[in-house]
Image (cartoon, rainbow, N blue to C red; front, side, top):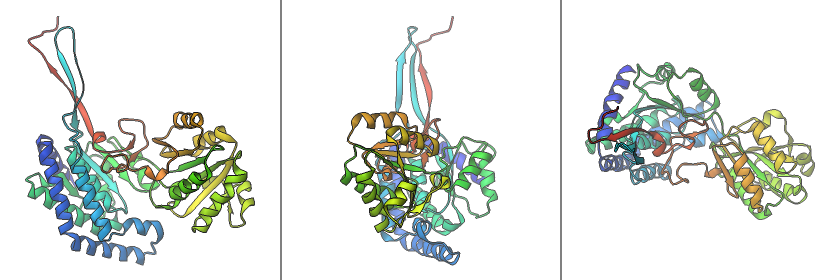
Length: 413
């Protein structure tokens, strides 16, 4: 592990000095290598999935793990999309000249070495590696045991791409062990080699990272995402958004976990919204009002308002207008993504202003909580903290800056 860290540090220095065109060429070569390695990657994924099924894994977790030709093509395409982004390194963020003639520039620079610890989704391997290379950073990837074979095959293909483009192959390294102690070593920084940690996984993983890390962390604990249907919501729009927010993909962090309905429109909106979800195979756990409208609704308790289901289950509550929705979200939200559906722009603006989440939407599905949908090409994660990066962490968020000062012989009196 210490050797991994040393190799990453050397690669980061070399990669930071490469031109933006060189890094983009390396990523295009990596995407080509991913396609060429498709038989190897998919065979590794079949083995990972077979092991998962043998352990009793099913549902959304298995869906996140599984690759096919179409998904692998999408992974390679995402790497090409990142390659096509504007180079984030060397951007002049601000410039000014002082009265003494000194000219100052604040210039974007790479962070250095990024450690990414993730669980079942093998696409994170390619997304994280591509974003780090594009932003001039080296990456050390620690895959979960569930996706270990698949992630190893993806990382090796991308290293082949860097090699073909004459970039340092150790800019992308995957921890070659499933031993959990490797996580602890990364959290301790590998003797100063790692500059920031990004965890991608469940609550227990992220909580461990935040408890033990001795380096900065970009993280979110959970995606407890809410959709609030306001009294001024168009019913047809609300039905389409709620169903998409919950069921498009239930296993992603942007999936809605709680539906809030304004009591002002409950008589007209609640029954069709709940029926749509139930008829689509989604379990609904509701308060007394919601239970009364359909016998299939199960009772909800406080645990449901605090649960990231990552499955076809949603909690539903009728609230007393916007104030009630804001109070519920303030109490239970994980500050990830929350949405309001309303035709009342004043209420929408209040919701956007007062909900303290990384992503707040008006008349749109929470499933847009994705770096690709933001135009970032991909994301390394959704950060719900308030320091440095917040929301989708793309190439710009993976840079820091320094100050470059140009003078003409000035000395300080």
